Image (tube, rainbow, N blue to C red; front, side, top):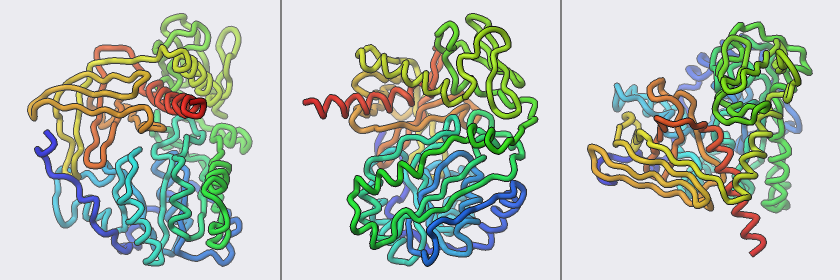
Length: 421
C-alpha cells in the first residue's frame, strides 16, 4: 500500500508570508467580537525573528495570534489536515493558500528533522516561527503535555523564545462542543521567556522548565475568577466525551449529556453545569465541581491500570489515510490494539493489507478527534513521516480520551522503568 498514493511534499521551502491583509481581514472581526486583550510582558525591544509558542484551545487561537504579532510576518506550523481540500488542486487550493500565507506542514507527534530545517530557514528570513506545541486542542481547558525536545529546538534556532498564553478560548468553544458562546473579553499574555543571549546561556532543561511554567493555565478557573457567565442552554452537551467515567459508580463509558446536564446511564446520577462552568450534583454529593479535577481523576485511574500492567484495549476500526492534501482515503477495516507495548493497527482493504506499529517509547502523547468529519464518530490518528491514519473504533464501548490518557501514562511509565534500569 505504501506506493499507492502520492505523498505530501514536506521538503518544499517555506515561503515568506504573503496575503497578510487577507489574514488580518479573516482574524480581526473575531478578535474585536471577543474584545481580545493582549498583554505584552518583557517584549520591549523584541523584534522578529523569534519563536512564538502558543497554547491551543480553539480556532480563535489563530486569530488572536495574528493580532498579537501584527504587523509582522510569520510562518505557522500546521497539521496535514489543515492543508486538505479534496475539491481543488493547484492554484487556489487550500494547500496553495496555506503555503502562500507561510504555513509549514507537520504530522503530529512525529520526530521530524525536516521541520527543524524549515524553522531555521524562517529564522534566517527574519520572521516569526509560530508553533502550537501541545499539538491538539485542550480537552478541558488545561495545559497538555509538551515534547521534551522543545528546549533543544529553541536552542538550535538561537532566536528569542516568546510564549502566547490565551484564556477564554476553551470555555468559548470547547473541543467537545464547538458552538461559539460569545465569551468576552478573552485575554492573553505574550511574554518573552528568553532573549537570544539568555537562551545561549541556558541549558535545554532550563528552557523546558520555563516553557512548562508558562504553559500552566486553567480556562474554567479563569472563567470563575472573571465572573464570566455563559447562558448557552446546551453548554454541557458533549462534555461526556471528556468525562467518560462516572465518579459515583466508577463505571467507564456510560456518561452522556443534554442541555446543561451531565448524567450516568449506569447509576442514574446527574450533575448540572452552571453559568460559571462548575458542576453540581442534582442529588447527593458533588464529587467534582471543577471539570479539570474530574479529568485528572480519570488520569489517575488509567495510571493505576498502566502501573499494574493490565492496561489493554482492542477494537475493530475503519481506517482513513491522509497521505497528501487532496483528501481522505478509506483504506479498509482492521483492528486497533493499544496495550503495554503501544499501538498496533492491522487490516486489509481495496489497496491490500496495511499495518502500523507505534511502540510506547515513540509516543509521549497522541492525537484524537471527537466526531471527526461528522462521519464515523471519534477517532485516534496515528502518524508516520509520510502518512496519517484516522482509526475509528466501532461495535464497542470506548473513549478516545482514555486512549490519549493511556498513551501519556504509558510513556511516563516507560521513562520511570528506564531510569530504574
